[in-house]
Length: 220
Ligand code: AMP
Image 1: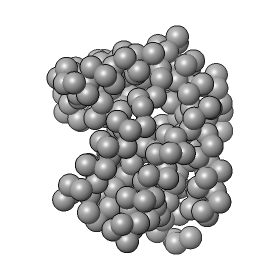
Image 2: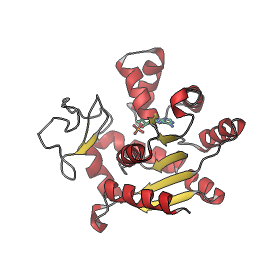
Image 3: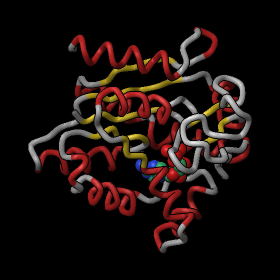
Image 4: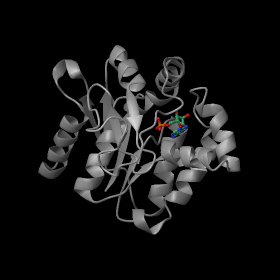
């Protein structure tokens, strides 16, 4: 099964993908995580990606598409994948369709998340991540049991460099301008599942993940 997580920054794509991955037994692949690994190791790709990521801009399509194309060839994703943060442009979506088509595959489900803009800022500035196992926490909505420490693996939690108020505005603009047309793109294909993630309606990532699993298990 091929699942795409779509949504503005801070809507809970990674959190929900993490739950789906465990329940469905298919790997979660986050292009953001791959870029962060390259930045940490200061590879050529990392140096290039950093310039865009630190300004809240999207990494150019040719670079990102090439990266995913190679990742899709690896054995662990042959029976399914949860793409977390890819595609983010119509060009990326079109190229993904072509890559999958070659193997007789297709995107099965697109989980489209929305969150009110004021909540997005709050969710992002309070987000902490585990650099080891990639677990995601929120200091207010979903704090770790022990302050600053990952519940799952005991690693020290960190804040992403681009998780600040200034960068988040640009990231949100990039989403509106370049990524949001994908809602229409996938809606026309008939594989879109939309959900609101918001504390105001008592629906956090884990609640939406449950809804998505139910939707998958009960069939469309
Ligand atoms: P994320 O961890 O998904 O929030 O991604 C962090 C940053 O990596 C984004 O703000 C972009 O700068 C970059 N990035 C991740 N995925 C993509 C993509 N599919 N296309 C372009 N840039 C991306």
